Image (cartoon, rainbow, N blue to C red; front, side, top):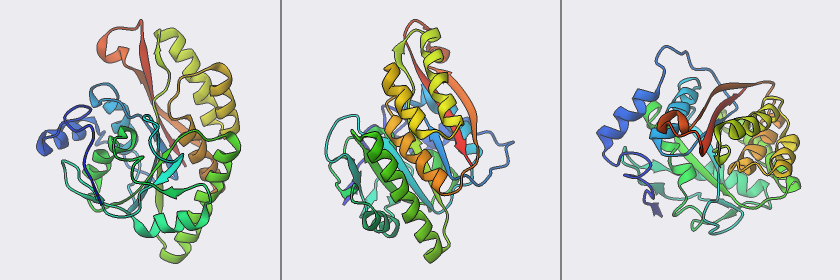
Length: 271
């Protein structure tokens, strides 16, 4: 199975040299990267969210194995869909699927199923890949698309992922970085969007997956990646995470100059 890029030439350049140059322009070369359990990174077109994503990935070491959790925007396939075989064809080169880690996750979770259809047109995971390719071109990818999960299912899946990663560390001694792909509030005035987003971000900073899920649902915050972030936070806590850093927060208005209707972008690191 070879997955072709769905949004190359739209969300980011399809030309390899142009793409690498743009991604590199978002990195902060003066930062010493640290080992992280997980990150939250936005997935809009690079002109809007590339700077925030670049600030995040500049600060973390990219291990050989990366698990990306993204929301299912198109509603295709299963609610917890993994792709374990084959590769993703990307402008900067093909990325191999991590069949070993994927198989371990499948063995540890009753929620996760093999389902390539959920990945075919989904952009939220794809746009993260070039940032990691620019920093480490031999990394193995485990992509997990998440749909409509209850809070109980999110917490269960978080524990399942942590168990899989812990078991995998014991057998292979490899670290795994979890990347939760997420955009914050969509299409509200700057002041409203920022106020709502900071409420949700506070829950992330407090390592409170239940509080995040309930706040987003209760306040009607249009944070599209609340499921991936909730799952990642629960897994990170089970893996021993102790703190979260807010690296950057911007909105589309910072690029367009139109603050009447914005989308929020937050970058965070979980250690």
